[in-house]
Structures are given as C-alpha cells and as structure tokens.
Image (tube, rainbow, N blue to C red; front, side):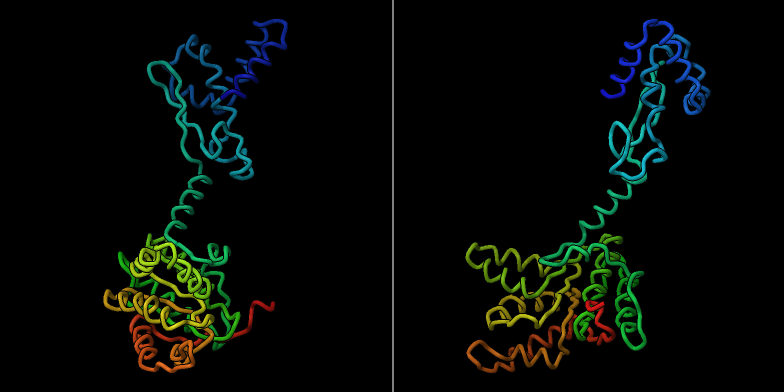
Length: 311
C-alpha cells in the first residue's frame, strides 16, 4: 500500500497546479477499462464518493488480478505477493479483499501435497518424480510400473495391504518409481515415508544414546505407506535386523500395512545377507523370519533396463 500512496503523492507534489494534477489523475484512473467495468456494476457510487476513493481505485487498477502482469510468482507486482484484489462496495466505501492468485493456489496445493511425503536422507529430486516422466523399455520396467500404478489406482481412503519389492541392478529407476508413487499418493492425501536404508541404519544406532529410538520406530511402524530404499546396501547387525527392522515389519504385517522396497538383491540373495551375523555366525532362522515378513507385506518384481545414471 505504501508504494501506491507514495506514487500518488509524488505525482501530486511534482505538479504546480494541484487541481490540474487531480483532474489528470482522475481522468486516467476513470478511463481504465477495469475501473469502468467496476463503476458500471456499482452505479450507487456518487461522484463525491468516487473522488474521495481515487487512491483505492488506483490500487485496484494498478495490480494484476489474473496474473496477467506478472511473469512468475516471485516477480508478482501486487501489494501482497501472490494475492489478487477483489473490489467490493460496502456502505458507499470501496473495499479490496485479497485472495490467493492462481499461481499461489498451485504453490499452496503443492506444499500441502508434499507434506504427505516425508523422507529420511533421500535426494531432493524425489519431490519432482511423476509417473509420466518414467521411461519404459522392452522387458524392463513395464511390470514394475504396472504393479505400482495398480497400487495407486486401488488406493482409496486407505492403500492396499501389500507393497512391492523392486530388485534389479544400479540405476534402472527403482527409487524414482517409488518416489513417483509417493507423490501421486500425496494427491490422495495418503502419507508416505521414504527411508534410505544405509543412513537409516546409522541414525537408529545414534538414536540409542538420545532415547528417541522407540519414538522413531513407532513412526515407521504406523506410516500409511512405508518405503525402504536400497535395503541390503548396508550391513545389518543382528540387533538392527531383529529389534528394528523385524519389529517394524512385524507390526506392519499384523496391521496389514504395505511396505515397498528397492534393492540390488533378489529375495534369496537378501536372505543370505541377513543370515550373516557380526561374528561370522549364520542365523538362518532369524533371517528367514525377516524374509517371511517381507513376503507378507510386499510382492517381488524384477526391474531391468539401462543404467540411467550413466546417461
């Protein structure tokens, strides 16, 4: 508001003849198509009321009401960036009510959607992942995309009870596909938690000392959709395998909550890795229990194709 007032005051001050300046200002404002249309809608306004509120009319006319004067939200020219004025008349007074512009509405909607996607140590680009950007190759990603899209289509108020275990070599798009799912589910206001496993292991170890481990485990247990990215990339100690991963998967299996995984290893290879304890012991039974839980909450699908990280 201040820059509008100062512009008018400067205009008047720099003219020797105040009346002449006022008439020029009045003529310019009232010749505006927007102001003409507004006054036509409100014939009850008298000449005196109009003259006393020229500044308000100027404020209304000088701003963008349909983003037509702004190249982007950041370059918005309006008094309140991202908000457009709506002119009303109340008791002979012109009132300007500000609402979000179309760009601001899109930004707020995007922020709301992103609030349904939480990530732990995941790259920032996952927030822009979409199904439409996924490239398909023969015998590569079709089955994985079909399974993931079907999960999305079947998600109503609550998601289906079983996720997908995506396994394949490096760079074939496993993580991107599940990030796209998370962003699409956000549009349905279904919350998703994405976890990068190697960093997750390290964080959970650190949480032992600050007594937050139980709180964090509970969060992972209860997310509507849980995604473990790159399971098998980090050595899992017997403690983490049984007390953290096992507890999370057991809860989600009992509550029929879906879990998605990405891995460079198929299920048999992952089971072999999980059976190796820190001292070289083999704990096949405990590893088998974890794998049974993984099978209960997800369905294995192989992803093949080119390594897109090298392109």
